[in-house]
Amino acid sequence: MLSIIEKAGWPIWPLIFASILAVGIIGERLWTLRSSLITPKGLLQSLLQELQSKGVSPEMLNRLVQNSPLGRVFAAALRNVNTSREIMKEAVEEEGRAVAHELDRFLTLLGTIATAAPLWGLFGTVLGMVHLFGALGPTGSNPAELARGISVALYNTGMGLFVAIIALIAYRLFRAKVESLIVDMEQQAIKLVEVLHGERK
Figure: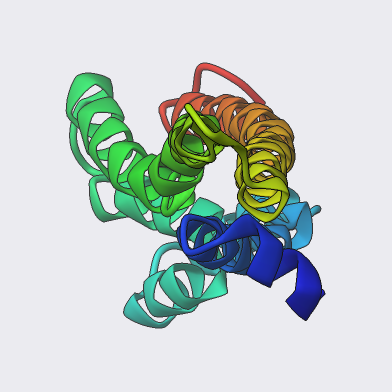
């Protein structure tokens, strides 16, 4: 590995840093965006049963907020239980936007890595070509410099593409996951609002 880094030259270091950062983001998002943490199964049903038996209480609201992002959306609806459907829906949408923003955390950075990594690899390729052409002179060529120029060009191109491919795949998968979670939360929140206003059983 160290020999590859030496052959690739200094442009490989930002790509190594980007790859470490991308792996960290991927690991964090894999852990954080689990459905069991965002939209726990059975939360709506248990909440409706508790509402029928006990009604809304401050303890219930605090428990919902600490439970999950879906619980926070439900709590926003229940804080406005005595208001009109429109006001309750606005409160749910406002909290939903805040939750969606949190679910998107680090994804912009991951997308930026996916976009910038091949460009930085191309930059390394250009530097390698400069070394390559610098090794060609009127008196002949320097084989060591030719080899170094080729190494810088190829290793940086390969590393840039590798980092970009991994980051792009992860970015697309996480974006789809976030959109799916948001749709699930929206559907459950709408059902809660309709039940609270007697439009649905």
